[in-house]
Image (cartoon, rainbow, N blue to C red; front, side, top):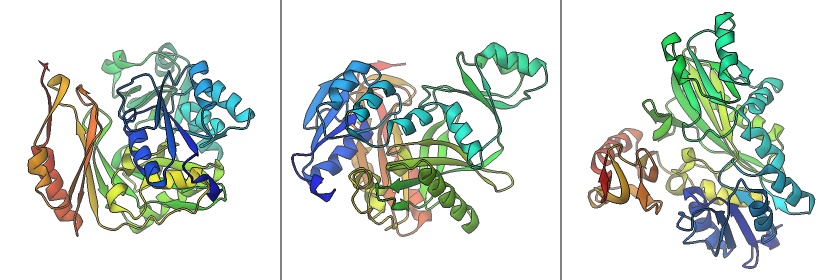
Amino acid sequence: MEKLVISNLKLGIIAGGQLAKMLIQEASKWDLTTFVLDEEENCPAGGIASFFVKGNPSDYHSVYRFGKMVDVLTFEIENINIDALKQLKSEGLRISPDPEILELIQDKGLQKEFYLKNNIPTSPFKLFTNSSEINISIDNHETSFPFVQKLKKGGYDGKGVAVINNKSELHKLLQGESIVEDKIEITKEISVIAARNLKGEIKCYPVVEMIFVPNANLLDKLICPATITHEQNGKAIQIATSIIEELNMTGLLAVEFFIDRNGDVIVNESAPRPHNSGHHTIESVITSQFEQHLRAILNLPLGSTRLKMPAVMVNILGSESFEGAVRYEGLTESMAIEGVKIHLYGKKITRPLRKMGHVTILSSDLESALIKADKVKQLIKVKSWDKKL
């Protein structure tokens, strides 16, 4: 398959956000021709792709027509028209990861049932058609507080999730098919990104620790390596390896975990693509997650996942006080700090908590990286020229 890495290989990426942008930046090193499908012409990847195609990733005809333009198809989001992908696959198009895997992961209910079937540790759950069924289950003492409700489909970056601690919060229940999980008493949240190529070679990245924005379920800060025990580290890597192997998957799989109060490692959910928890790998690991994704889907030897230096990554999020044409503060001051690497995604409009970029901070030891990361968070502000909320 190595012969595919030539300038006339047409790589298609469905959706043109920051993940696609960073994937294209890696693909350009191998002189690959890149196509991006997105509804927004000014999407982050649109300006650097070889070809931009306007279309809706959830629309059958948009996805099908796009697939006919390329040799290999991949994606940066889960909300894609599966029927179009399956038709393209039946006609011989190479799609990585496979549409059946995407279909399973699109549905959080199917995803949880997969974990249960394969003896993968995950929190207890129930499936519901609507919020009325949840209320009935509570009245019948079959579901107890506190619990977490997740819509089966469509959730992303904290959307589609409701935490219900007691009866007074039932007004927060989401409408639609969903799963309800016991609320785990979490001591840490961690993630492992696994890669697998067509030959079956598997490599995992070092485990990272994730700290989230309070009440937003949105990644704020990432620490690598994670500050966990040797046993917890090994367990997380073993579980991620078993999941990607059981799926017979090609590409990257990000597996998010909870560590509960007993120290047990429990799967939360997975994403079959490059992931926010792997952005630090661009600078801190020998092979970035984006290069690894390309290696995997093109069936090339997987690259080394050895950590070069401890790293902390912080997301640059839109201020909750501003909306409109973006204006950044503190970039110059942050760049003066040794080991600071800034990535802006090119989004022209900021909104509260919108991912506008990220910063990776490298240092010889984790403690100094954390100190620098806190300083960067104080310095960089995302504001707007137009409107203060």
